[in-house]
Amino acid sequence: MSPDMYSGWGVRTLSSENPAYNPYSYHRGSVWPVENGSFALAFLRYGLHEHLDVISRGMFEASALFDYYRLPELFSGHQRDGDHPFPAHYPQANSPQAWSSSAVFCIMQAMLGLYPYAPLNILLVDPHLPAWLPEITLRNLHVGRAVVSIRFRRAEDGMTDFEILDKRGKLHVFMQPSPWSLTSGYVERLYDALASLLPA
Image (cartoon, rainbow, N blue to C red; front, side):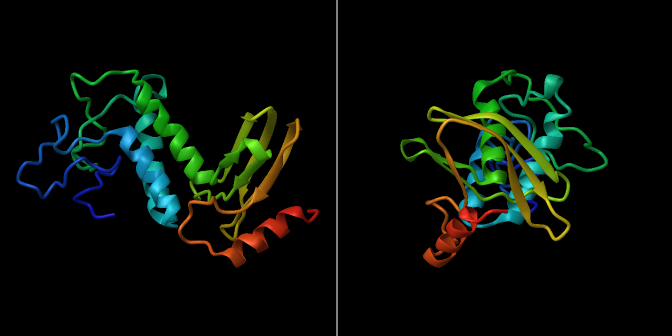
């Protein structure tokens, strides 16, 4: 991501090189977590995992600087550097903000490649955990009438695998890219599906 769009915390609403740029404005250079959640899903779709890692880390680190880890509606888009070590508050931003909380789930869905399809009792996973977050455990994830708990772990070679800790109800979990991925062909999907059926 180019530095004129990425602040170090998230993607801005406007390039810092644009004459209208104002990092403390509502829509002319601020950072909106809800939009960054959408960007995370887009990066997954296009296989841009490096960008996904960057935007995920920025949002996670930003959330740690707000009360109760709650991302506000938006925050300032100034560059993250020694003079600006914190994402500045936008004075009129709502906090908490419901749609900002959705960014966390979008980012998590993108990092783990989750694609539930309840009518067929299927959960597709295609995890790509970054080095800074080598393990995630999801507990009591509901897919239709089934409930599953899964642990995802990044190995030393950079690959991420998963382990089903608990499953209640009928559910098939496959390691496979989602149907809307633009980087996986039929051969790869078939290979992943067959590999998921083999015992560990």
